[in-house]
Amino acid sequence: MADTVYSSSHPLLPPTSEDDRLGWIRLLRSHRVGISTFYRLMAEHGSAEAALAALPDVASAAGIKTYSPCSLAEAQGEYRRGTALGARLICRGEPDYPRALAELPDAPPFVWARGQTKLLHTPLIALVGARNASSLGTRMARALATELGEAGFTVVSGMARGVDTAAHLAALEIGTIAVFAGGVDVIYPSENTGLAEDILDRGLVLSEQRPGLAPQARHFPQRNRIISGQSRGVIVVEAAAKSGSLITARNALDQGREVLAVPGHPFDARASGCNMLIRDGARLVRNAADVIEALDPICSAPPQPELPLTPAPAPPKRSLRETAALHSEILSRLGPSPLAEDQLIRDLEGASPEVAAQLTDLELSGRIRRHPGGLISLAS
Image (cartoon, rainbow, N blue to C red; front, side):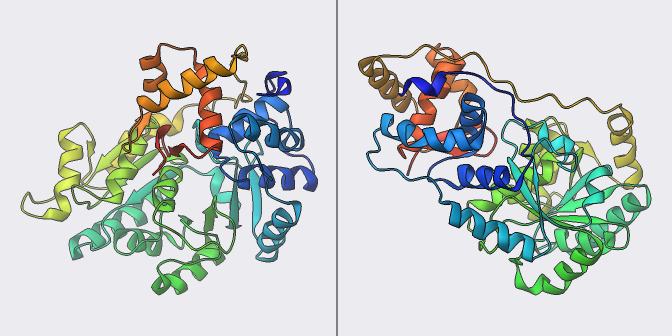
């Protein structure tokens, strides 16, 4: 790897100009640059411009002979489309970036926001559940959303059918945040077009994806980590044993958020996930008062000052033979099922910065894939 790669360590500072914002877009949208690699490059080079200049050498060291970062024209196109929609690009470190979301190691470097960004400064509570929700489930979602809104909370959900839709509808008058899996202008499912327009008028739409991008299957787990990550708690109303709502709940647990669940009848498959969560220690929810009781100590705590992202010390350079050996050892311990990066580092008994540097190489070369929650696997 080029000598400049580990030349220095820098805290992450938000962009201060449009050129800086375009640089952030270019770096994150460059081929095979994920969130972890974005932060690592920013930490090593101090700015997106410097990271972009170094990226071809980094890719070359990872075995990619021809590499071109995301072009300025492509970044300008994304920026123009977003601003034409009336959307704002909110970068990590800026005042409107959700404070709780910024606590996460895999927080998106920036999000596109359309609507009332003032809602990001209110207590946020996520409410999710089954797409094929029962009548009782949607009634419970509406009741919780209404009462929590009246208590000062802003309801966050994912605009899916069923429980998500019921929660957004009930919270419209007070304030609700919808996190999209695709771009902030791509409404999914299309049947919620009217609801999305109402949210744009009175609430807020967020997405980490570029405007105009249609959602794909891999985007939904990524969206779920934002739903839970910016919230102080996640309420699951109905969820099957294997469902996206349980993914959101697991994200919440990994992120240190409170997980709450509405119990259901043991014979109802739509309640099996919630009952499992309660069995495993989630707070049982009968009404909004139970939620408020659980979250009041969290929401009453004074906010902690956000610290700049300061990387670990740079690892020493390895020879090509040593690097190849470490790559081989990393790949031998990975499979198609995602593994936590910190577990891999413990298994390898290596220094975190040293292994992280090699994971960047392997990600750029397309040999590993990163997943939400700090998980990695072999590329399919």
